[in-house]
Length: 315
Image 1 (cartoon, one colour):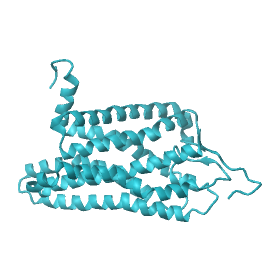
Image 2: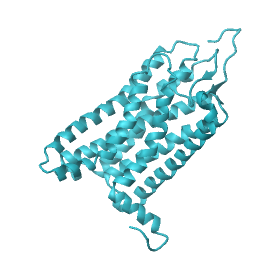
Image 3: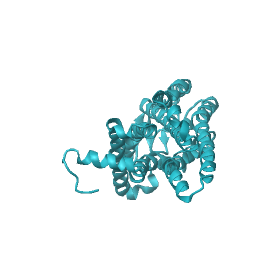
């Protein structure tokens, strides 16, 4: 509770990247271009997978959900981040900050579980190819996608309620480009141990355990690939999961560093640089990885681009 001689904070000041303010125009343009590529690339994935029957298989079904959550995840953060960069700081209300953090958390949890579902798909395709069709049924894929979105909604409300009851009576300056948990918890007037442990528990369940499942899946995948007798067969099997593996390394590796190993304790400003990587890098590389490396997706993209022209002039 705030004392009588203290004024309750009603809005926060996001500092963004103060150390780069002399280069803010270049940084603004760079992030804006990346954001446009993220929007176009992921919208293309969602559109193609939704309407091209050749892409309506489990791998692309989960890729569509990954692209959709990437779109919502970046849109929740990047537009306001661009404003903060351009204005060398920006204000946000407590309610707006709370909403941004809650939606951010839900999207992070969804990303992690969707990636785990994609690893299950690759595990079955490589380790048990004869049982793949009977196991990865449309019903199972639907349930995996549904719980990817719903898990955070069911597990997080208690944490969100605890955060919503916090009061802020001192500084309102957040050294970050969005409302992440650690920086604004450091400004709260009450003890935050319960919230920190609550957040750690949910992050463990919805980030670390899916990440552990992915690691175990790929251990089995690599063992199976090594047992393939020909080098061509091993190369072909590895190519089917390499894009997903790169995505997992960039996404889960940074998340585990930021939200598991540094979940408790004071906020470190360098975490915002790690946060920038998974806010921009992963949603940016996903469309490039899956469009460049996958022949079926490239074919569907060409058909989509040329559908209104009658004929393509390229192969």
